[in-house]
Image (cartoon, each protein chain N blue to C red):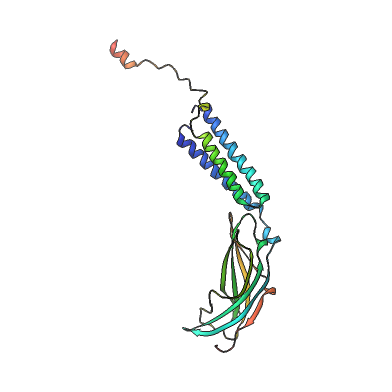
Length: 80
Length: 173
């Protein structure tokens, strides 16, 4: 995963887990049932693991541009 | 975030932190609930007195009781279960003793109305210090612990002015 991809992955799981958790909490509050909150939270975590942990292609759209390799100085010194 | 394991760690532990926050908010949302909603004990009294004997140097009384209480008001979404127990209170030399005679765990999914009829006590009424039980006036009080999903345990009990009393015989029977 490149740097932009890592940033995107972190943003995605922050949003998913917080959203599922908060919506689940509100529904659970009115249903008077904490298991609703727990299930919504668990769904959020599972979805986040699926979307953010494997190295999907859309996380590699900004590959790092490495510099050209420097010629080996010792080889140069030996040969010259 | 550069390897699968680092990302997995980040997701899981962020998830657990959010769960902790949701649990604390649920606990806070029910602060003060028990002040407003209290179960009422409709009946808790001795039904049949069985015996009062001296066993190995300690006085021991056995009896059965009736109980009628609806515990529904004590429950809310942050309560996992209630631990309910019947306490016998009697006085020795100006100080009060409390002895648990019977208990029950009431989970959130169980029936919350307890109707015990002529139920025998689980634990004998014993004065462990070898004190006298003969002739004592005993008050029966229902007490219960609220065991939350998240948070501290707290107790509540039946007001003493609604509790029933009985007097143990003055001779062993």
